[in-house]
Amino acid sequence: MAAHTLSEGAVSSAGDREARNRRLIRVWLYLVLLVLATIVLVGGATRMTGSGLSITEWKPIHGIIPPLNHAQWLEEFEKYKLIPQYEQLNKGMSLGEFQRIFWWEWSHRFLARGVGFLVAIPLAFFWLTGRLERLLKPRMIGILALGGLQGAVGWWMVASGLSGRVDVSQYRLATHLTLACIIFAAVMYVARGLAVYSERPAGSGIQRLAGWFVLFVFIQIYLGALVAGLDAGLSYNTWPLMDGAVIPGDMFPIQPIWHNFFENPKTVQFVHRCFAYFVLLAALWQAVSTVRRLPGTTHARRAIFLVVLVLLQAAIGITTLLMQVPMGLGLLHQGFAIVILGFAVAHWRATKGAYPLPTEITTARS
Image 1 (cartoon, rainbow, N blue to C red):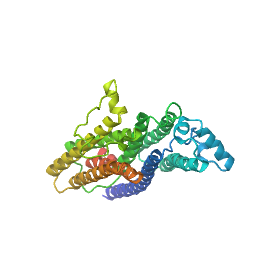
Image 2 (image 1 turned 90 degrees about the vertical axis):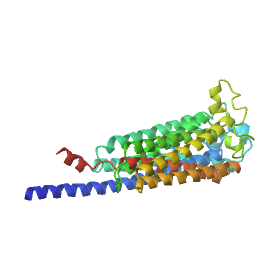
Image 3 (image 1 turned 45 degrees about the vertical axis):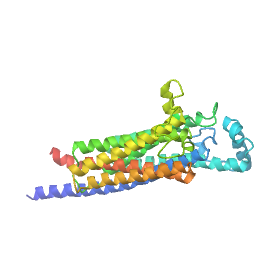
Image 4 (image 1 turned 60 degrees about the vertical axis):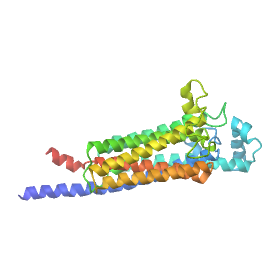
């Protein structure tokens, strides 16, 4: 009897220790999420200010140090003068004007480098001190690897605008933003898997609905990135009609036809609008289904709140379009997309419940 009581006490103590470790890791991951969201917003500002090509070299280590004197600033400026964007759009700009666009791009790269350390150093600490559970190790290594890939994709994107064009490829811009969102979603998924939930996991049907909704949000973000890459939001600034019609004409002038969905600003904006309606319908369907199957639960309340978020995002998007994309509203629209993505992923994870604690797995096996 005494041995059994001692064993239960040891299990309880181990469970408490694991719960404390999970809280620490969760706080760390929430901080990572905050920085990732900031990077996305600064990246959006970099795009909207035309600053993304101001640094014409990729220096992953040395590039953390900005120009420190007048001579170094002139050297950086001379490199910028060699690319088409300067020759065709910014010819004659002053050094001060160049510095303003330089700092946006430098800040974006600085934050991107910083988040790598913010992930790697605490990860090493938690791992080496035995605070990181076995199931989390491959997940965190995968996230770190995605971060490294994102750095390479970022330079691949910038390189597309250094010759032959005055801006970056919309294909590469959309890839860069979508990968950033995948990293954000992965961190959110792991963080919420470490949470403590008062509700039992939902059924498989609700879980699938939540997972599909996350995918729809990803697609809409990708479409939004194409709109940004083509500056498609600067034209056809009416709603609900577009170019005076529900379905505008002349949407397929480019051959082959499928290129219009990625290269024709009118077609890209129209698809982005239509898919926004679809996302709203998907959110409504998810909410109705969840309320019917799990009335009065936290799962149902989260699904309803997602509908509210999507409606707010629609209002922000329409206002941004009607006002011809002022920078503040454009960034709000992009930032709110990240909020919706984060909440959708958190809801998806919650429908599955938390990761089992190692002591729970051990107890179940014994």
